[in-house]
Amino acid sequence: MFPGDDGGGAAGYIAGWRPSSVSPQAAAFARDVISKTGPQGRERVKNPLWAAAKLADYAVPLGLDPIPEVLLHPSVIERFARCAPGLSGVARRTLRTNLRFIARRVVPELAPAGVPLPRERAKQPYSPAEIAGYLALADAQPAASRRMRAAGLVCLGAGAGLIRGDLRAVHGTDVICRSGGVIVAVRGARPRAVPVLSRYHGRLLAAARFAGTAPVCGGADPGRRNITTPLARSLSGGTGLPRLDTSRLRATWLADVAELPVRPPRSCTPPGSPAPSGSAICSPRWSRPARPRRSGC
Image 1 (spheres, rainbow, N blue to C red):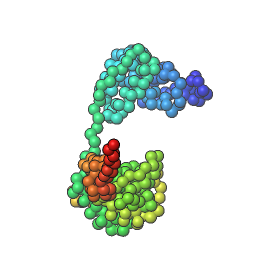
Image 2: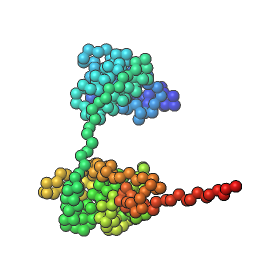
Image 3: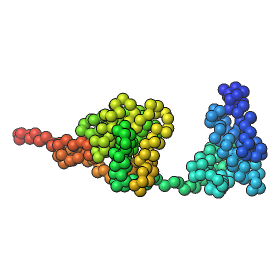
Image 4: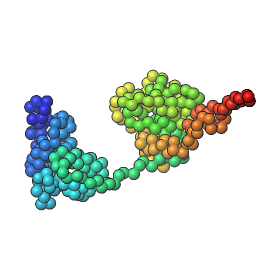
């Protein structure tokens, strides 16, 4: 039993873990090696149990002995991560991470060597014409509320790079004019202030004024994950545009931010030059005061 555990803690969970999706021999191997990894919480042992069982279920039919020194060898872990059928790229990386953790605890004399796994490509940003098409579709919505919410969705995604819960939780009062520009006060787990690209200021401010104290993208509960789904569906009309994806809107914002000029130091900034966000004006150049002359003796 783990220190600090009662019978229903991690040790009890490991002892009673018998999944039907893997063979009994693979489940027994997983229970044996995870019980040797040291004190952990019940929630922490679920993923390692599943990783060890998947490894054994793959390796035992190939003729390998179900013992830690064989199955937790670095070459076996890498072969499983690269060649096991029916796994996505994310699942392969997650399983390999968990198996390396188990190997470091159970067989520390075997040092796993890292081999890079293929990763998914980044989302393709939208072109300026596609963003203009989505904004035109937003203006063509039959109801004023749908027009404002759709425009706010595009502006928050492509203008501030917000996705998921940060996007759903933005209220109209969170869009603030400050220092000649517009910022969005993001709530949630990582509260922060995000500047908005200047080309989206007008539409976002109009959507925020319409929303007031309500969420800009609509809905009453930001915890619901399907708030933006009807808006994205309404902006996927018969104009040749792909279905609106908030992840691609964020990729568009990242691409636009990468093209902004880097702001030089204040003492080297030419007078009246625009700031990187295009929403403020830099202060005039600072001049060094004249050095006093020493009188000759």
